Amino acid sequence: MKDIFDREKEINVLRNSLDSPLTVILGLRRTGKTSLVKSVLNNIRATYVFLDMRRFENKEYIVYKDFLSVLEREVNSITRKYKGLVDYFKTVKGVNFAGLSLSFSWGKERTELSDVLSSLNEWAEDNGNNVILVLDEAQELIKLKGYDILPSIAYTFDNLRNLSFIVTGSEIRVKSKFLRFDNENSPLYGRAYVEINVNPFDKDTSIKFLEKGFEEQGIKFSRAEEVYEELGGNPGWLTYYGYVYIKKRDTDVMEGTKKYAKKLLSTEFCNFLIEGNRLQSKERYLKVLETCKFGCSWKDIKNALEALEGREINDDTLYTILHNLLEYSFLIKENRKYFLADPILKEISNVKC
Image (cartoon, rainbow, N blue to C red):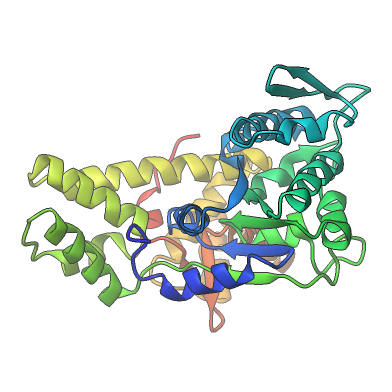
């Protein structure tokens, strides 16, 4: 577990939750959720199928064929690893074979996710094993049209004792809009699950993280506090800064890191606007981010938007704007005040989508 810094609590909770049907890991992008999952699973040599949903970030919607293509590739990766596993799929509808490889159909004779999960579970049961299916950045599956994978997860809860799920998400809506635990019509309503939160580092941890990283490279680094003040405690930005510093050792490292961070955040912000048909409201959303640079109240935001547009903004409109920014984790709420989830967001005011 050497590559995971100061996450002992999260590591222990995840290890202890692997027997649970469902573990949900939440945290902002680049805080280390994926590294945490892979490090723990690799460390215990777990059998797992890792489905990276980030490939769908730039799509407005996805269909079952898209999901199946990812599932097919990752299932093939473990059928090649475990002799005899491919045979457990021979009775599954819509599965075609070519040697040790298989392909999933998506037309009339489409392969059902529940059948794939049942085959994995049967193999695991026969071989004294367990299989973990990881849905990484699962909020992207909210875009899935024409197919609901939640019944298959619920089926796993009830019937598949040798298979479990880990779901990671960078946005609050992974719980409210994808898993829908609180929705009486959701197949997962009322189900028990383990939740793990992976937060950005605080100031002291960020400084230790940087100093230890540089120390391992034989570099005595004295500007860790300054770096934290500029970038915040997101491990992704701190790691990128350290990488560039070691490679270049010049004065432009901070500028280059911010440029890189702003580019990624701008892309994510544009995806947020495009995905929800919010482009026409771009200036409103940017004004809210600008207003909340150092924390803001409902009244602050309302006043700022009314000054921007020169007219009254009704409370329903303001609620929708704030709700969207919170759901997509651009804002966080603490003690009735709103703050930027990432300090670099205060520098994307000129974003072009």
